[in-house]
Amino acid sequence: MFHLEKNGFSKSRDKRISPRRASLTRCTVAKCFSDCEVIPSRLINYSDSGLMLEMDYPLSPGDAIKVQFAPDADETRLYGKDCCLAMVRWCKTQDGSCSGFYGVGVELARQAPRRYA
Image (cartoon, rainbow, N blue to C red; front, side, top):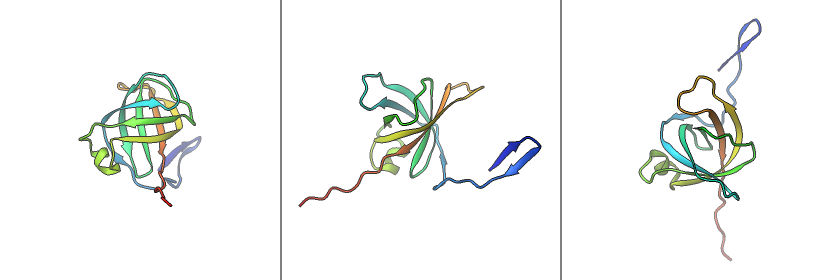
């Protein structure tokens, strides 16, 4: 990964934990603990631990959200369910984008296995 600096390019390490897979899957997003409407979105890329979404509505870092995929989506097969809980890590405006005003990075919630006594 390269970052533009004042005097040119500099190389920096990519700190991602797992590789990203490209996608243009449509999905919906709903804020947890809120009466907000469902937000139409598009999945831009995904990994084992997170998603990058594109949407016309800004979200705030720390927002808990529910991401809903179609039952036949590749992501549904990957995650084993058509709904994922996640936390917004970042949200940035996308200048020049034709399909969504905001790019949103989210970290997927991990569920611990239930233990019965």
